[in-house]
Image (spheres, rainbow, N blue to C red):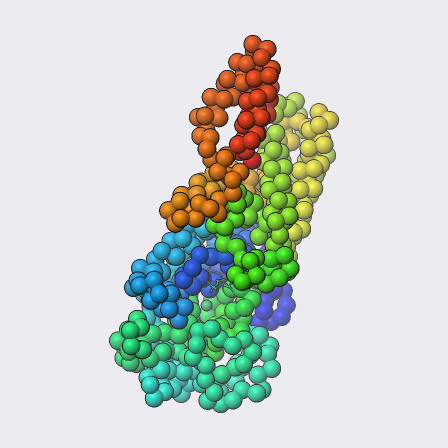
Amino acid sequence: MTLRLFNTLTGQLDALVPADGKALRMYACGPTVYDYGHIGNFRTFLQIDILRRFLHLIGTPVFHVMNITDVDDKIIRNAAQAGLPIGEYTARYEQAFFEDLKALRVEIPEQIARATEHIPRMVELIQKLEAAGAAYRTGEGSWYFRLAAFPEYGKLSKKDLSGIEDGARVDVDEYEKDSARDFALWKAAKPGETSWETPIGRGRPGWHIECSAMAMEYLGESFDLHCGGEDLMFPHHENEIAQSETATGKPFARHWMHVRFLLVDGRKMSKSEGNFFTLRDLLLKGYKASAIRLALISVPYRHQLNFTFEGLADATNAIDRLRTFHQRLTAGAFAMGSNQAVQDAAKKAQTDYRDALANDLNTAEARAAIFGFVREANTIIDRGLFHISDRDAALAVLKDFDAVFDVIEDRDAEPTRRALEWAAQSGRQAEVAPALLASQSLTDEAVAALIGERTLAKQQRNFARADQIRAELAEKGVVIEDAKDGVRWKRK
Ligand code: AMP
Ligand code: ZN
């Protein structure tokens, strides 16, 4: 099976296969670690996780490099405001970023590359560009890329850049979106700012050169795939192509994947609009990490995702359905034999699921295939027509699903616990939802003790007390269910 993925460069679905016949060599633009990641950032990292996991599912090994931008204008400004050296400032947010990835079950790339640890490689690349006549130094000691040196500029974003003004320059990290100008490769040191002494002068790298140098360091001059959010297509990725291809004379990445932006309630997410959410914000509101993951991956990456709290509630219910089904399969007692209808439905679900993902990572259709099967199988179980051999077929469907979606196994307690710990340490207790606080006030041992007391009360026919305990648990977010083999419970 081959993944056909939309390629921004060719404007069509292309088969994504390793050029070396071994592992798919990919680079993903990582975070700028100046603040906590927001759900828009995580949508992009999650969709890249879906890509990785699907490639693994179809037997393609991956070598995935992700950079950490740990020096830029915003970092320098914020670190100065906090009165910290930039390394200390960024370490905190880098750690938070990895904690958040873990909470969302995003697999960690094979290679993480920090910008500040690759300065010599960037300097070498700038020297190469200078030798090719494509980089020039300004009076104050900054270096720029000469756009006129790369006639193919614009081939990724397909922008009409005929109005490029030779020699017009842009030097801030917050680039203008619609104008093409010579861009900064290296910024001359300013008093009080972090800088490096190098053969091209004292200063610090521009953002674009960072990704070109680190991608080529780990993946070679040409590699299979480059990914990022749609905002990076222009000018960041266009600039990466210009620098890299001018320096090497070879194609840079063959395939480009761009994830569309997330909106919240139909609007651009922004702090001033009050619709801006970090992962931590949502965990403190009491949403589970698995539900956030599912909500952020269920809309295919090339579609705009409109994030809403109804969507999050829907994801919570969907996961509940899956987990209940999984439990039904593993705990249920079924008769010997098999039911052809289940076998056929399982096979079809598995095929439809893989086909949907192979078709430009259509997560919505893939998810629908699995949920259709769960509905069908549940009905068959209800009718008593589900058999032992059907269980293996159904579990195989769930296994395929979870290899990519990864939401069935309940590992939600840990991210919530960590978010609460973080809230306590950073004085954000006021942001914790009361229901979440209440549910945390009961330890697992306390739940078990109350359930024991309830069982005893029932045996003694003290139903009033038994009901009272059930209500008390429910109030604290613990749901109990009486099953044949005892009492099961879970936190809502
Ligand atoms: P940054 O830390 O701002 O460099 O962003 C990290 C990644 O998140 C980049 O790939 C961005 O393109 C992506 N990104 C930023 N905002 C959003 C958003 N609202 N929706 C989806 N992806 C985003
Ligand atoms: Zn980049």
